[in-house]
Length: 618
Image (cartoon, rainbow, N blue to C red):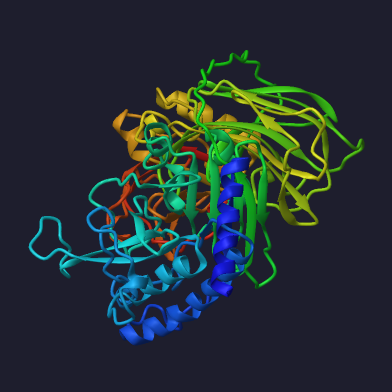
């Protein structure tokens, strides 16, 4: 009788989907149980024991989702074993996953004795026993001995998403294209555009860092008519513009797709923020940067029918505000203007992008600093991609140099907001990020987006941290003709003048210079009085630091010191490390020209993001 009753419930649920044009989706933010010593290779049995601890959590959540009538559930990237592995230590966790296009397997119906495919069997049974689609992430092991491009150990290993349908059949497999410092995995030989069809629409899938690039996301949506995305991710929040709930919801609105994002839950390392997002700005999301427990999210989602539209590029007059200043936002240099008044209109430009804002602050007499900024350039930190950004953001302190530094605290609400930009591309991702006593949130259904414009007529009820239009100019991802400083160098004099102006404006404690070799290729040397600065030069690409001590001929490279006689015209400091970023830096007051090739590698830190001034050349 119990089996018959379950069958009746399933029929009723299927009818509901067909009648009201919706489906029920779920994502699970997983508080992962991490193996001990992940960099040490273990036996297959130990790896299975470790993964089984997480699979048992998946089972509990899948059963709960089934009782709630869920059609599809998404689990996070790296959710079975974690993120810190070497190529060797992750091998016992991998399984050889068959190609579903050749012969779709149904491991759950093929018996329990499936050595080497135990995880696939478990996931297949989760889907079959609970009559829902299961999307999960695990490692794929593909032998390739003798084939072109085969690694020395004789096999490929890929970061892989798998999808099992309600019968437990493997219907889709995707190998992550854009790896994020994942030396344990290989990049696939070609981009994979993977989708699967269901009775409630066509779904595409990609993983975490993929979302920032054209392929595979854009062709999936534009060429394969995908209307919903499943997105396993291990996303570390990167404020102010790339918090998980902020950017993933922006992607949903900007591209007009349903977006089911499942993240890991490791607050100590900023892994948190999952959600189910819809193109109308609807969101069911979870954000907790303190608690240690995961969360199952369930929402009814409208099935989308794709409608084409024509985009008209807007025009903004280039009115440069006299109070414009520069600030670093996630390692990029923005042109910014402070919001001095409690209401008003501001426009600010950089290169070809001009942004405008109209605003009104709900509570007069505020004491917090806000700035409105623009960036049009190539981002090169932890990945290379071209951005055009218009953003309103709350500054960390009441100092211009703090604008762009991460903060989660604000008390200022806006009763009216309109942000607009003349973007050169249609791929614009709008977002509004709020704060409730330091807990991040989304202003669900309090604003709308239409053709490069973010508008809130009735205001944002919660205190506002960020309102942004983040555009990706995919065609310019390899464009080395631009700099992140918003300045095109032409002569030594123009560079020196630019430096003098920037140093006078910001009075920085450090100076960051990147791509000095580009200047050298143009016959340009930098010539300015370094007494204006506390004399640190930080080369981000080489992860090196060179410090010039004021009024002396001492060069400090990392922890090493080299004394230089005053008047020396050039010093070769190659001996301090291997060559990686060459160029010329000259300083006229003490007559020193440095040939930079390396500096000591530095650990990843927030240090660079706190530097108040940056000049970047490709």
